[in-house]
Length: 495
Image (cartoon, rainbow, N blue to C red):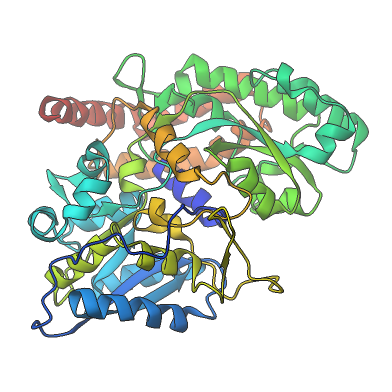
């Protein structure tokens, strides 16, 4: 759910997932998680990311606490942190003395590095004692993939652990110009689609991708390479070794195609500098569609976000990368005053349908109502809810109800989709950058100078690639690749 750790996280910041939910009843499925009513009561503080309306958060929190008080003699203080302030605030929480028990941990910078610094607690023993529901719910390879130096420091949310790749676009435009999507079976086949849109809708960019997510990433990510978060040395699926992405034929081919599209006017001319989300470009009528990772229900999700009915074409199998394990986790911080009680609550997020539905969807009757088929919708007369939670962040989303418009068996389909994924040969591998941090800093500067514009098609690859790779080598990319290979080989021996 996402892929790529940093880019995956940025995608998630862009995308407000309003349709993720699951089929369930009001019954709680979780047994008590080991709480003892004779224990001293404890308030668990949980810090997480939010992008949406949370006006009714106090009411939702009160309902959750009715359940947690009874089950584990604890209450929960929800601490939402706005996306724009997340990096600064989460860092302050981890480095200061403020009491915080659970925190959303994301990717290498937000999960792996704080773990190595001792800012998160190892959870292995706590999971054995209080986390049976977690162990039963989270796929073993995903939980194992969350290990840092052999220990688990965070519990991944159950969501889309895999992704396939393709293009999502406005259905009204497809229908208007009788575009036959059954004939679109490859990225190259999209050229004729873009040509039609360009000729008939001059004010609309056929490709609405911006610097936030550029199209060649779709080609290279589609089962060719695991980019290991920063693209500075990637693991080849075929060769199962670390290689220089920017010298690979698949990458060169993708950039050449992007250049063709750019020269034909199919791509936004200043795409490399536009920071608006792809969704916003389509919503405003400036764009026709965009390349993206996909999953079951993806077109419906994007329809809700863009305000236009969307349709998707998919070109790859589902693949699962390391960021599935470290992309979105809940970690117990070293500042927690009661890690045992905190783990008991964390376990409830993987066993208790009532708690997860309250977090994900709010209060029944106030924020949603249940249809006869078990799906949910906004209450009659309500146009916009005062509580929208990004539930993909945490817990077992398969416990939550399905929003109207999705297949009632949405979560069954999602779990099958996850199970069908091709697993990266580097799944679970986490690189320690310390031995080459100087080279990484220098190479990152080169990446920032070239990569976005190159992938947007704005630069001539024949002229740019030699210069780009020369500067990368001068910055030390070969040393980074050698260190990654060394660590990758050592990891493979133990995994």
